[in-house]
Length: 171
Image (cartoon, rainbow, N blue to C red; front, top):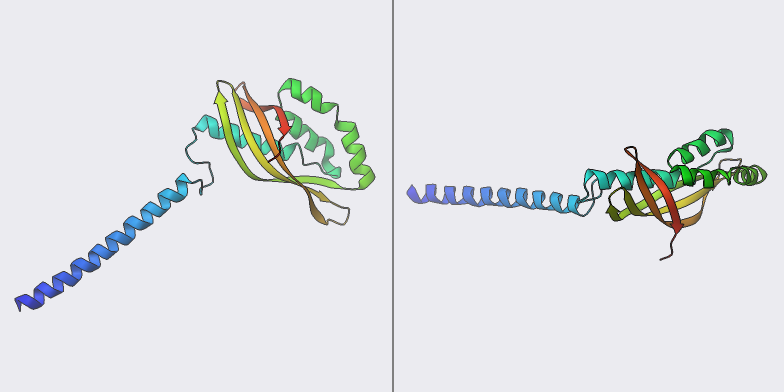
């Protein structure tokens, strides 16, 4: 009887050990997933760094997204995410952009496929953003026409991260 009880406890210990190993492996896998950026936010960034990256990603979308029906408000959204100096420069492109879209009868859009913080020093951050530019014709047919890589310089102005410069970069 003692041997049967001993075997029974031995089997229970093995089962308990197997469950413990499985739980620990699951926790380790989850932690690794989070550290490698599997979550919705970039791994290891401070709130300020993440805010700069999020603002750069949104502005990369805004500067490439314009619909004919709402062109003025789309353009205003793009300019609202820029420093005053950059907004003045961007304003000079407005009429040519609208004219080209009207002639081609297209809407423009963008999606961000990735972003990463290069540096953050004081009130200035540099972020690399990867995006796809899309064109939609008058029938609603959507086509990607460019894959972009931008180096976006963001400035912290009155508590908001604003785009101060962007440059196209090649791989």
